[in-house]
Image (tube, rainbow, N blue to C red; front, side, top):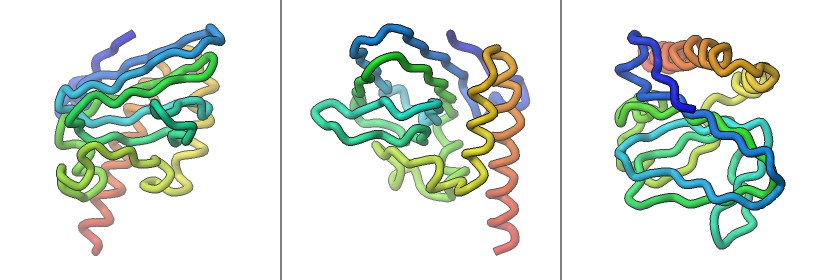
Length: 153
């Protein structure tokens, strides 16, 4: 399911995507090379890069991609993808597009201890619109906190 952001967030967020699979088999998941960066949120770690058993962080930012990034899941999964406008991740991370290109960055590395409590509350909700409402508050606040740090430094 794909849902558009509210108008005031459209300059930063392209759309939200909800992916869910209740089957126990292995499924392939792909990040596209559409010029977007984004945020993947998941309640549990069951996403793996192809040709590796290395875990991908439960929730992560991804930079723009030169080529498709393929993953696979083991068992059932639930993901929320927040697809950003091309420049929004760079603003959040205070970095250049070149530095995050093709990168997977753990949300915990960026937001530290503020994200885990938010994410735990988020995944207890079942209505996608309520989840998006919470994200529509959290993401601008994250941006404002980063902006405040820049101004005060």
